[in-house]
Length: 158
Image (cartoon, rainbow, N blue to C red; front, side, top):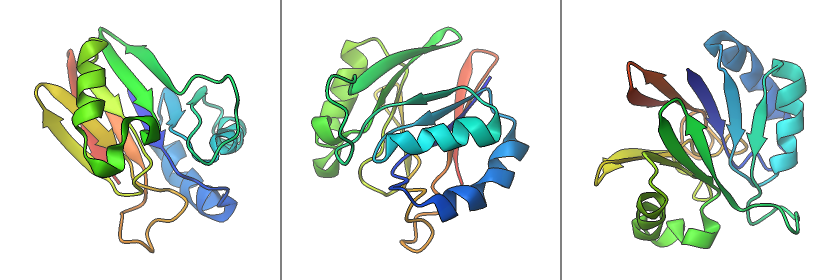
């Protein structure tokens, strides 16, 4: 199983269009958009013919929409959130505690516009960076990939 992960597109349709050939070639099973212009996910859904899960960020106006979600991924559990409500710009302690409290194996987040991949206290933390502002901020392409193979999570940043 393969998840394609994006965040912080900020309506930059040009950058989203530029990413389509690469995203298609990756043959994901699901695309996750972690907020800040989460409605951009509709374009991904149409153009990639993939199911999409999108959560709002601090720049989205979506009253009543869930700010975080636990997504089953095979036998693993993933915490999805933008990260602003967990203060990820000030550190990842609250995010890690929340993931552990919910019994999650990984936490996927955005908000900082900086890619991040690490395992802390047994939890994989993955931030794809900003697809809307990469690479001009030196943050790679702003795409994350999460795979589940033989019961193991593997992540990559592009």
